[in-house]
Image 1 (cartoon, helix red, strand yellow):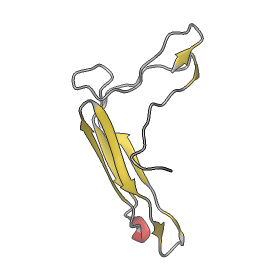
Image 2: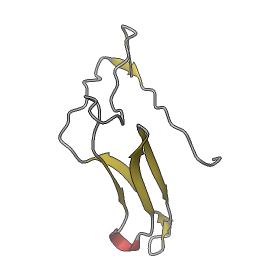
Image 3: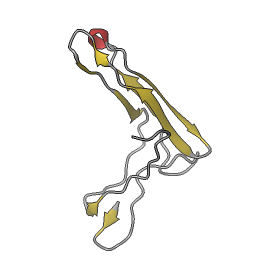
Image 4: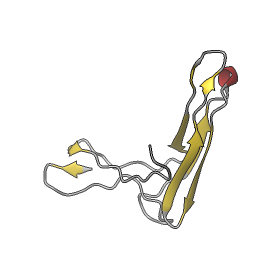
Length: 94
């Protein structure tokens, strides 16, 4: 995240032992017949979130998958930031 001062604030890394490293878990939509599935793994200091979102048959609407932290490590205060940067890469064209 970019602060007005120009310094970056790192929210999360996937390097074991870093102050910004977290424990992550993947969650999907098992309620109401959801069929979406996914995984979240860390390999080579990269977080890999993979999955497929499928329509919930009973609702005829998209389900969901998400990744979230499952630890009590605090995130940095980003209230001074004016923008956010997410470094992401897709394995397939979208």
